[in-house]
Length: 51
Image (cartoon, rainbow, N blue to C red; front, side, top):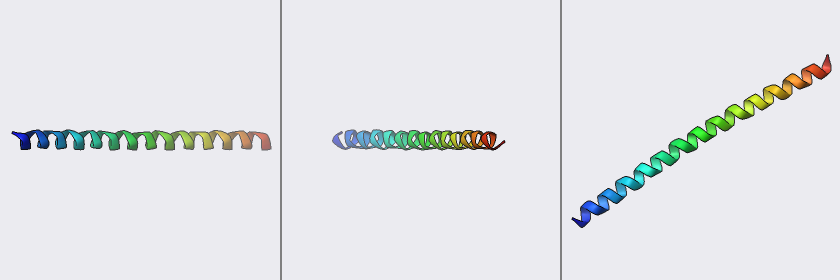
């Protein structure tokens, strides 16, 4: 019975770790997209100033 409880705790821990990794990857993706959008916006402003 104790082994079963330990196994259940280990499974829940690894599951939450997997969720954390998924959300971390999603956050990095969103951050990357935001940086690309900002760079594109700044490039557009610079080109507009040159004209």
